[in-house]
Length: 196
Length: 196
Image (cartoon, rainbow over all chains, first blue to last red; front, side, top):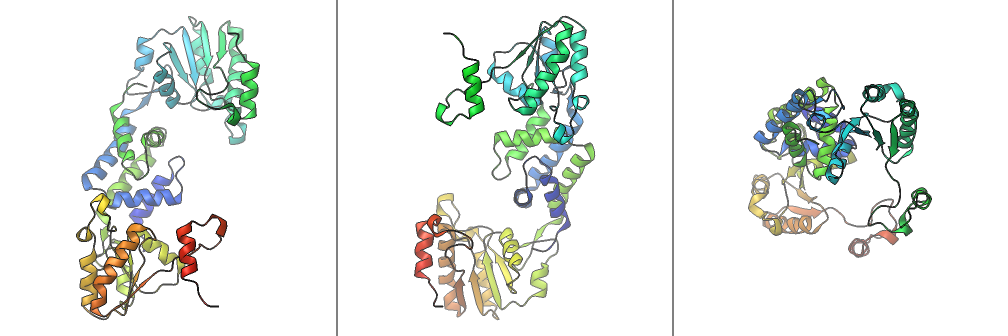
């Protein structure tokens, strides 16, 4: 294969996407080569439009095309659900059982990767709670080491403000089999058992 | 997650890439949201550049930015290696043991998906061989049902032209274990055994 600079450049661009290695990036670049012209143009335009149109909500930090997102505009602010990323908002909204607002941290504390408490939107959360009117803050960061640590860290900062802080339940997943559950999950499921 | 048209559009664009489903497309689109502005612009530009710069070689059908690709320009045309896609050329070039030219079919015969002999570059291959000066045609289509069938089909058309037609060897892969080889592969490896 002779070297074609534009293909190499496109490969590099694809390789910057999460989870895309050299081989996959090459595959995507070849797909673009054989793609109809209009489709490639629409693709390029969509990239530029996203950068132009998408902003972060000035209240909760979620993705929006307005200054304050729709959820922040129409919902009560007495319960705040704290998540790591915008896609976690999507995941929780799909359950249709939560009716409060969110706070997107845009990361979790991860000293190994050099992400400290000041690198994520913790002080913005403290400011929201300090303003008053908040009854409960639900920590819905991922059930992993970083997510747990971040939840604990934030809970410690929030409690002096007199707000109830909760953590989403951890246990065995719906539809899974005990046999295949990992030990930590099973341990938590037993520990947090509920009376029927 | 509120609906943002530009994100939905970008997701659709990503979802058209090979092997990209809805979830992955969403993940890529979010990555673009948090990407630096210049990086997204370079990405969009690379897409457009590829469509503008990349053509198919008028001789072998491989990807190039010239009218006739470098390989066709500098190599002897007495051996032609027939492959399914441009990336197969890359794969064979990496071995550094082939010194002839290529012929890219841009597909293999696949009646189930409505791809017949006239939909791939078979007549262009016949024309090249009919011009004379070709000693051997190596069928290097994939070792699967479609690749084998296409190789057989083309071989039948080429033989009357008095050219030697060969097929790349099939057998157990280097570094693999017999225990895990599938039956067809092992069958071929036994059948095509070589005297030492």
